Image (cartoon, rainbow over all chains, first blue to last red; front, side, top):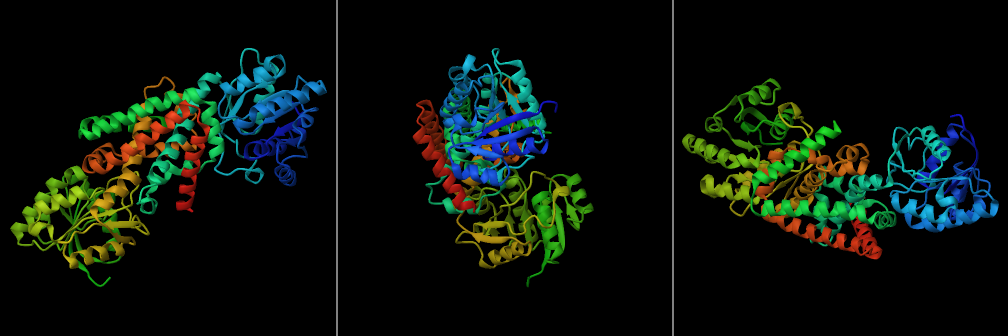
Length: 292
Length: 292
């Protein structure tokens, strides 16, 4: 790490923002870290846990001296937060501050940034760390969260090269492996690997919950059921926001998945053992090939 | 354990049958254990691993002195194996031998037993241990597989009470918790907790495998995707057999699941955040309630 950030502002000091801060502090990569967000209680807790040096509940005020602004709030809060950042930076004459985020969908966020920030979002670098746990809040944060995990950046043509370099470097300092791709490709891949599986898990539990046998279903559940449904315990608000923000790519994946289930249903209805065997064998081969 | 079995015959000496044998041996619950099955290589391996004392590739011959016969073969092989057992027991005048199985679906197996065995299957006790690993074969067997796991027995009115008692006792000796329910209820619960989740996992991987992005999908897969798809690495033959054997209950569950996915698709298409939120919240509550 050659660059040391004088003033880092973290908006949203929960698991994602808090872990980012702790990892950077361990590497002495920032001189001062200011927290911002809606909840003063969360910010107080974050300061107590030494995730931030100080905080400000007024986002526009919090960003005025920032060199880098890290936005780790739910996607549904992104527009409001971006607007407050833009107002604060403009008032402070600090419109070259680097802004980056950690949202799970990127096309919509990129669009927001282009609309809201100065120079069509030239200093905004969209990012997404593929990391997390089922816990949330400042107390869940830990410095190793990003170690050996992938972080995807989705800059556009207009994005400032030096801003990309600095954001890349910061993520590398946390121990993450940084990859760059288009927001479109990111959203398609994440729709398949993360968003669709969450809808599947929520949907499976929801369709079973009104059965008379629901108690027995959980009582006799083996490892397979527990694995498939684990992510149905994820945060509903966060996942509603992700679905709404990455609607088209998820709809495309769901369409193909619904057709697949229809095909399997028909194969089973006509007792077509050969067809079932073909699907199961292909699936096993694909999974074994890519996971071993 | 009060009863000691003089002669136990295990047909299918892989993970399920082998672990059953090792657990009973540890408790000195059997004087002699004979293996039987199609593959001499597997039987030789099982003898070498001390899973069985001796073996016979001729099932009809293997069962002639058996007090208890444990059938742990894939569902697709059940009919042939049952017929060979019936022939052997009849020839040996040993038709009061207790027969039990470990198949993942029970109505079809019960029907087979009633048709094939003497006295409409009076000495047959249908069973299903809710245990297993992703490995198979004699080398995968271990004495603790059934420890604290549930075993479901699905006897019918005609089933001999003493046979039920003995099979229950044998399973308890392995460390399992035995529960009794109707074959119909078993098949419905297992369709929901095990069979549908396997179809979901196979289907998800299969519908993604032809995407251009399949390499990226596995490269950027986080824990959620890995969990949901883990069981897509299961044995295709075994799962084809289970699907075909428990067709109607699985079709009923799939129908309800397909409707659920259709509803989620429509909610997403119309950007109905309230509906998504309601489904996600209910699912999370149900899962959290039953798993904590």
